Image 1 (cartoon, rainbow, N blue to C red):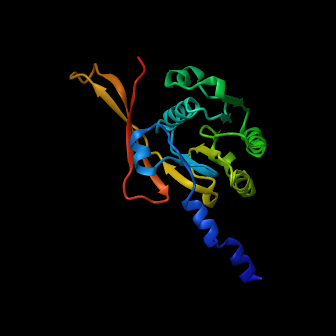
Image 2 (cartoon, rainbow, N blue to C red):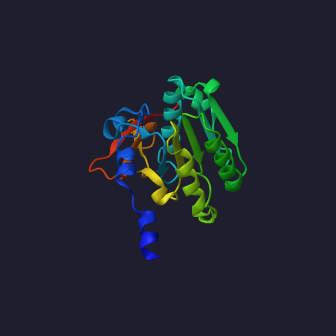
Image 3 (spheres, helix red, strand yellow):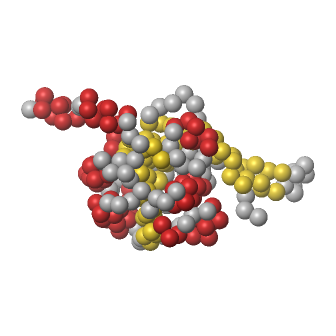
Length: 220
């Protein structure tokens, strides 16, 4: 019985080769794409970090880059916090973007489940960034395995945005974003202007010796 249970968790040579040969979709962030090659299709990518770490900028840039290339994108917004104006400023094409406005994690999980099983998406984003960790820990692990199986062998890039990593082993790529560093201009310490934020991305899975970084300009 123990041997059978162990065999169920071991990855086969064929599965490993499939993971290594996954097609990648560029994010539009030059430094990140140079480091990782992009985000894998047919797999879950988890992007996590605290507030003001750059997840929203990462999302807007990726949605803009993908929609312009003709990818059909779906955003499941668990806390109804998506800002269409900011997304438009980043260059997103709304003709190829479905925005699912949810009221809580349960509705968001069920919506994402419906969309991932319907197929046909180039990009599917499950944004759980503003959901409290206590609520997220109540989500059964079986949902993440269900998402993993549903997205396998499809052209979909499945992204989970959260404050902490929750998909665990179900994610093929895990990216950590620490708090972004503000960039100020002006010599006077009491009268400085915010020019932007320096955002860094650390790959946690697969582990890489270097990190990517990019600067976000402040809106005028």
